[in-house]
Length: 149
Image (cartoon, rainbow, N blue to C red; front, side):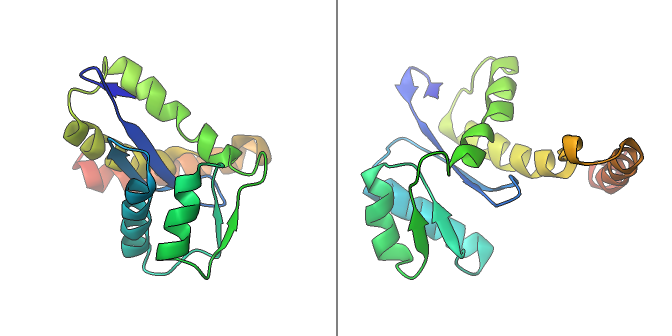
């Protein structure tokens, strides 16, 4: 994404269900940036994941060897589709907001937006309509105290 004409990179951690676990906006896409993201992810999750799926960027391999060498790292084709698809709601929101003005603003907004999106996003094609309505009502019930509505 571009912020004030400079390219910034959006690092996202997505679990096996497609839920966004962590987001980090950084200016670089190198091994140092990948290590920073992995450390942030490990700190917020508490335990290392059982598998790490990334694209074929060499920075991921370097950061993986340093931060979590015991975790299985996969770079197979189509394995990272879940992470690639998870950025679509972010892009839609970015367009509606007419771009982010700073990296700090993007970081604050996207880290909250990812958590809220997880609350309201369901695998709709896999469930019956009454179950979907029940889950949707439960999400709004959880959301109401958070917004003091």
